[in-house]
Image (cartoon, rainbow, N blue to C red; front, side, top):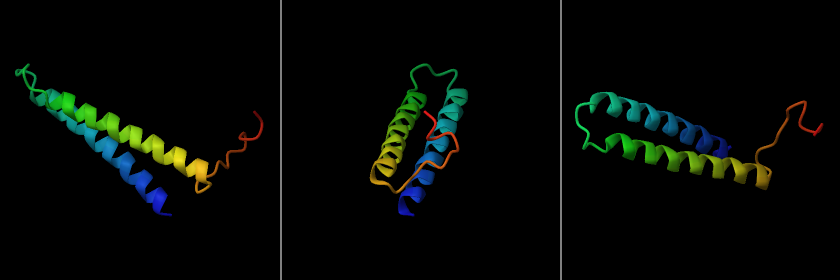
Length: 74
């Protein structure tokens, strides 16, 4: 159960970082020296990598499973 909470938290953090990057992009249009959008997108990439690692760990350890009807066909 703890892994699912971590995955949901990381997903929400990715969305928050993406929205903050959009906010900074729109706010700093006249300031080309501002790097806040770049930093927000860098944080988003790091959080997305952590999210993928958490999902991979869940499938590898057996905590998460695939119950899709087409999972065993291919």
